[in-house]
Length: 190
Image (tube, rainbow, N blue to C red; front, side, top):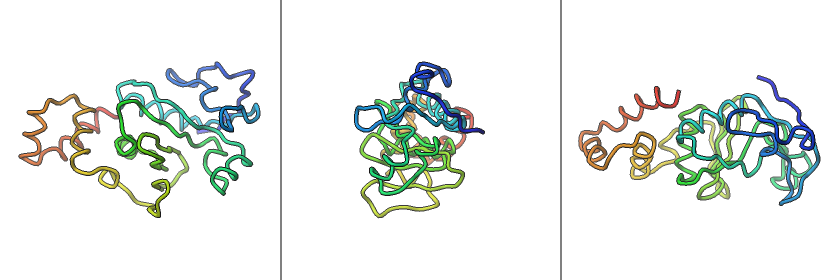
């Protein structure tokens, strides 16, 4: 899929998909606009729509999308996926960063980073990579279990599939939650 170029002034209110507009991905330095140009990957939008479906269409807040190379270098010390239009930093009310990271991994995002307690970095770079901000942890392989402790994992299953406490306890007792999570995500998140 292609990376498209937009103008904030001309295309800012244009819809990229049912839940995202061009202006949400604008280049910013603090609260100020950093140029008019915005690059956005069609694949990134497609993946963010999958995330939207997975969290039952709760609002996905894009805190950072496209960045100019100068700003990215100033902010991170390198030129990364944001400068190519392949990345967005997001949060969703009611979900922790680790829960969102686990969902993103299930959906197939390539790059996933935990920025803070509620915000994550997502990208479609073409190879697997993850990070935890302000940590030495980084790897080319990861899984849902990387991001979640067992207790949080079970809470996430409950959030995604609206299971009641009795069902969760039953699943824990019989150790069926892994199978349930696997089977349900195949259908619910597809």
